[in-house]
Amino acid sequence: MRAIDHGQGGDASCMRLVEIAVPRCGDDEVLIKVFATGVNRPDVLQRSGKYAPPADASPLMGLELSGEVIATGAAVTRWQIGDKVCALTHGGAYAEFCAVNAAHCLPIPNGLSMLEAAALPEVFFTVWANVFQRAQFTAGDSILIHGGSSGIGSAAIQLCKAFGAAKILVTCSNQAKLDYCTKLGADVGINYTAEDFVAATLAATGGRGADVVVDMVGAPYFQKNIEACATDGRIAQIALQQGAKAELNMQALMVRRLTWTGSTLRARPNAAKAAIAESLLHNVWPLFDQQPDALRPNIHATFPLANVSDAHRMMESGAHFGKIVLTVG
Image (cartoon, rainbow, N blue to C red; front, side):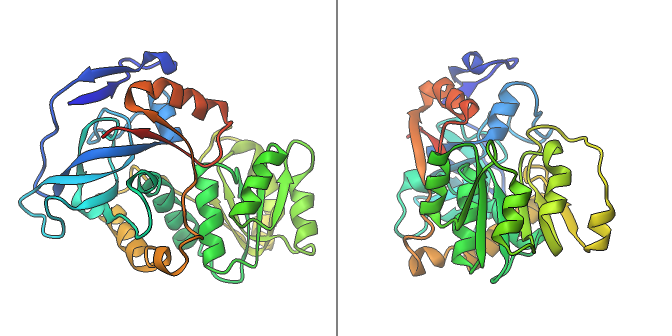
């Protein structure tokens, strides 16, 4: 099969289209003929040598896909050959075929194309696990989402809107991105290059602060996120793009009973990822029928697998709104 090899790592030019063996399908896995795969920030970090995959993961990049089941393991009963699915993968999706844990697969939502479905798993698993399960977002909460125009941010806006957010605030670097977020359902846009997001959040919430804060920036925002939180608020740390270490004054966290939680998705046990998939199937997938215009992933650009370097350069530029997808099949 054709697949993308990033060798010893480096800049986007290090990736090559190569011919390698089709992966074997384990007892609890399905083998999927890949139609498309989403490009995610961890792919860029892995390629550049800053994010080593777990020891049991595929050495190939690619954390999500859509495609067709072409083989099933001996223990698999849920899926059959010919089923169309989207899936969270343990790496390996930058290829024509990928072996995936059967419990990490979901049906293609009604009304979505295979291309759109490829943009769902990584961001929906991440947002559901961190915002709804760990930070316990619920109807009536206000939420501040940093990086609102990213794939994660886009999914968070749509999901929180669908589940009854009182107010959705987002931070972005320019007006075009803020306008994009508004179209997705954001109520308040904050240009972090021109205004203080803490002051803007407090002003938009009558001085109360946000019930939930979703952050991917890291160190420069640690203290500010605490200041932007409402009493009994929750901070969901999803990534640390600008550093993991900072000096903090934790007094406000204690006095206002804040909760600061963080997690990574890829390192979780298979059973934990399966539980997230099952929760999505029962709580979110029905919304694709009930609110067909509310949960449609925005695909900013598509690239054929051979042009993966261009896709990574776009991801690194930060110029995209929503998701970047590689077409494979």
